Amino acid sequence: MARKRDYKAEYQRRIANAAKRGLSRAQARGHARAGEKPIRAKRIKSDERLEAALKLLRQTNNQGRAAKEAGVSAERFRRFLRSNSLAERQGRKWVLTDNRSRRMTVITGGEAVELTLRDFEQSSLNGRYLAAVGAFLHTNDIDLLRSFEGQSVIDGAGLAHPLETDPNALYRLSAAGGEVFHEVYRLNV
Image 1 (cartoon, rainbow, N blue to C red):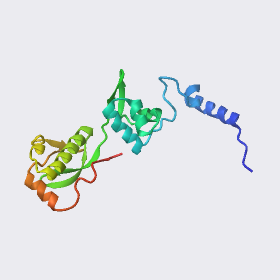
Image 2 (tube, rainbow, N blue to C red):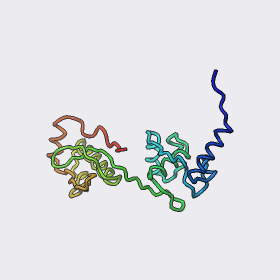
Image 3 (tube, rainbow, N blue to C red):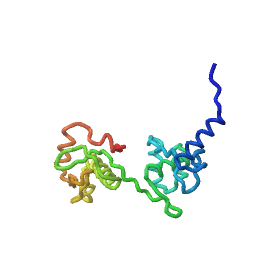
Image 4 (cartoon, one colour):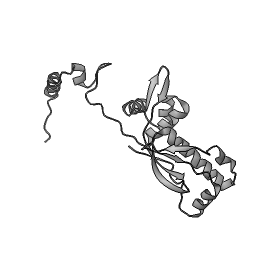
């Protein structure tokens, strides 16, 4: 038979242990007041639905709608944003502060290399570039690459890698085989 728990004694022990550590009674109960640090501030780990909600938040700037469309509770999504320092509230708007590094394929120097890019801006630039290269290879419209001439992406070590805009080099890479554009990016978490 299962042992019967003494909840009252457990609660008293928790309150006493917290008092020894200099914590308030509210913190010991697990419901810290505003301005008090919670005892167990767990980081919420990323999953596909939370990342989808973050993507929707970038587009709509509406946290509640982004969470609902991604199938995540608004509370969980808000905790995810705050615990991982991905966004902060400024007035009535969410300001994204997502500076996680991302692992991406970068076409530079006539070859495709896997690099860890510094932040969202760098990976966004590389993602737009890869989309333009894919469209260029399907349409042969060189104007798609003109906006990327002279631009570089910066990796995690701070090194700049110029984006390849030579059509012949891109055709060579495409003909060499292997799908360069199969996976846009992976977060390094």
